[in-house]
Length: 114
Length: 116
Image 1 (tube, rainbow over the protein chains, first blue to last red):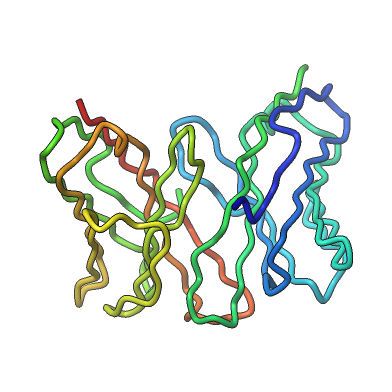
Image 2 (cartoon, chains in turn green, yellow):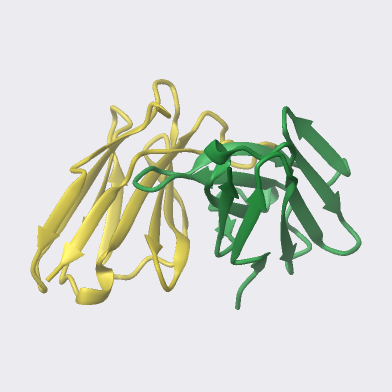
């Protein structure tokens, strides 16, 4: 059972455009939603995270939008740059259980064309 | 650089063998996590330790085990290796205790395991 569904699998965006990656979750107990960026040969790096008590969080060019009723959240990358080309993973966690293993989506391979 | 170190970077071994992967968390982080990344399964949580104690298990096989030592470094032991165990194994550490509102996990560079 895939608890976090991520789409699209791959995405091509022109330089300067907006990249949008979507995730949907099933477990309503999830209460922490991070996004990770991974370059080839590297480990995932934490980009930005949100809790469900807010609907949006912005850090620089990266914004998370969160829709609790729809059980969906998305990552927006504004003014996308070639250096943003990487694989992006959404994840979710239930912090109240005392066990903090992240449940990841399958990833989105993003290519920013110059 | 996340501050999490993992050794070795690459490991090639044969089926049936046993290997040990090592992780040193960021200075001061008490929580250590192990994840497996493969093409078919994606990134999967294996096991979590906090200050030397096991806190949670994910999709970890019985052939796999781990421990966290008093100096907080951790080792993941994989035994009776099969071809399907070939994957990237990541260690992550966190400054947040289990159950925190924000659980920032910082990943190491990984160990690529190839089972022939």
